[in-house]
Every structure is written in C-alpha cells, then in structure tokens.
Length: 260
Image (cartoon, rainbow, N blue to C red; front, side, top):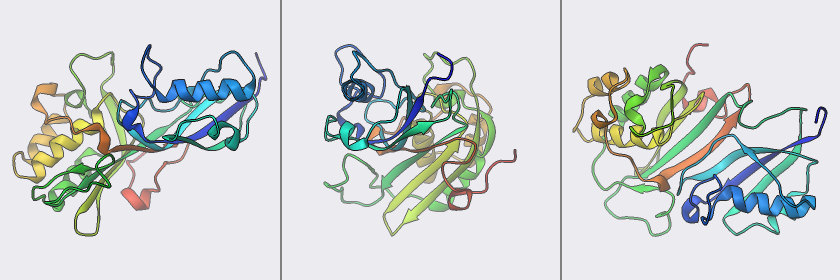
C-alpha cells in the first residue's frame, strides 16, 4: 500500500549454527528466527524481511541490513525473543519505499586469517587458521588487481543461477593486525555465491607461491571455475556492512575506491 511505513534493521549474528540467512524448510536460518520474533512483537501472524545480503551457511555478520513493512519496534523487545547468536543493533523508520536489497549500492565483507603454527581455540569459529608462511606483499598486490570491473565467473560455482558475472569492486585490501592476524577487506556493488571465499582461497595459493599474480589477472577475464583456487571455509567470512550511496567501509581505511 502506497505510503505504508517501512522500517530498517541493523543485525549482527554468529553464523556457525545457521544454514545461512534464507528460510529453508526444516533448517535453522537467521531469517526464520528474526521473522518469528518480529511477528510476535508486531502482533501479526507472520512477518517478512528483505535482506541486503543473503549470507551462506557458517558466514557471520556484523552489519547486516534488513527491511520490513511496519512501524519500528524496540530492539530490546526483539532481542528478548531472539536466540543467543543473533542481535538487532538498531531498528528505525526508513524512507517510504525503502528496500534493503534493491536500494543497497554496495556490500562490504571481511575475511579473517590466523597465520601462525598454533591454532586458536578461542577464534576457531571466526578465523581461518593458516599455519603456512604467507607473503603479505603478494596478498596486497592481489587485492590491488581486484579493484575495478571484472568478470568473476572463475570465482563462483559452475552450477549457478547467476546470469551476469561482471562485478564492480569498489575497494579491496589485505591488512595485518600484529604478527599473525590478517584480514581481507572487499567492497563491491554485489557479490556472487562463494565469490569472496574462492578469491581468498586463490590469493592464499598466490601468497604461498603456488600461483602467480599473472594467473589472477587472467582469472578476472572470465575463466572457468576449475581454473581458480579452492573455496576458503565459511567461518572466516564476515558481512561487515552495506552501503546506501556511500561506501560501507571508509575508502581511506581500505584502499582508494574505483573510479566512478
């Protein structure tokens, strides 16, 4: 109905025990848990959320955005009904007609790597443990190649519903936190299924000398999936934020954004 109120949620979750964002019969999903809680608070039989980024099983989020038709509600009311691994950080009125997915101009992800011999029991669900030596300069060179518009066919499963494989990467960078913690930050107009995880798996091969930078450049021209590296595990990936006219990650903290 024209003029109906719309609200926007900012959501954080640990994806370890979820079968991804999207509702699936017989599966525990983030969407199903949130819609159940929202329906109770709104006193409806059902509630429907539109999400900015549909995360896969095991992927986490610190800045997921979703929208729904209806008045904004108190975060405390929702969180009291949600399981321990989901929290609503904000719930606010949105402009009329706002759609969390359609209106998003970018999504930003972070993939975290623990690069040391010993694993971390405390971080085992949130970082990839990589015990082999990595060349950070090569990783950073890889990130530089990603910025701009490329064909990412090589970085998504062959069996796919995607019909467009070109994506515009606005910012990308590898950062180091201390001696053994690395993070890959990337922001793009949109992502394909498993795209970030295949990128990480391929870049780690380059950083260990198993591939060359020239091979990555060639992969970005639309090579088949079989030519790229392995798919990195889901638990290292975090949806960091969603942009609506501005980058979700400040350009200076990641890299110079691609030209408009």
